Image (tube, rainbow, N blue to C red; front, side):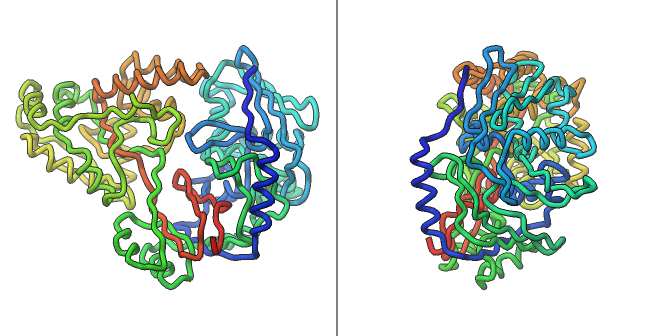
Length: 518
């Protein structure tokens, strides 16, 4: 059997005791760019909603910092030799916000609720067979054990349970719903309780005094040390960036996400600390390889050789990021030396390839949008200039985001400046843009070998074997150039100097990391 275990109990007790002793009743104010869509994990959600709710609920497993999955409410996870049965042993120290002790019955109740189509859980199709994987049975042989049986071997089963857009498959107390079965509020096991929601204005989270942190001596993605260090978090909805900056300057707001273009201005304030945190989202240039010209690999390679990646990324990210031509994000456990290989900037080679290609001076249409804070238009402008320098005529077609997304989904473009949302497992990251165009027009790379490799990566669980697959895929993508991954996304955060320890992850708030006066 394969086992997932955390650190020792002694380390947990010591770290928890230290954090508790240091705790003093405190309140912080955090700016939200928009209101949450709902308080139900994984249902009617967006990234902003997930960022709040994942401080309240927890799942059986969660992501570690490198995108690997680790136990959370489970103290261990065992996988059968055939890969079809998962046994979760629950931690004995976990309680819900209402004081009830966590048991396997709560896991089963939560699972049945998620699998009810009436709940409208975003990830239902990942487990009901529509996407090939199906949970056949969930059993609770005793109060501390949950057994899940699936229909086929999957390297992504635990990863999907941990996904933030699935609400981490958060385990809820039955009291989260009213007597008539309608939703009330999330009563979870997380470090903060969901205390109040004034729609359109803000949310109040309160430190859960009975919280027991999972094992670890420091934060680790959504696992590790999670003992909360502030008493109350007031999340205020402030959609206007100028108002956010004013709130930070006046010290009425303690933590806020900023536009990258505001960094230079805010950094001049000695009372504020500003940081840029990278995540697993990807900014890329796409080629529609069904277009007669874009089907020419020499033309695509000419474009790749024409770009000065450092300069392009510096402009697009206001100097806050660095190039990454891999689909594997830079902090991933799979980001080995092979993944760090990238396209080489070589204008001479670019001109030679262009001359050998089928390009005959026609104007290329490059689609972009001006949706803030995405860098689509900035990337397009720099690309246009660099391609014109080797003799390629480029016209930028600026569309509203919704229209661009429709064109992307229909495959209706020549080139496109596009951003992909974060995917922590490389198989899922490659799957975002790889597949059969005849079945899904939005797919960019329809190389049969690549599709087969990704399918294999979805079933094998050994890290060494998966690493070889991802390294092969990266080499193939650099040779085929179906798209050009430019750099990983980032979020810019500012905090007042009275606030310490704040450590967001994957663009989301980890409020349990905050200390006042640290």
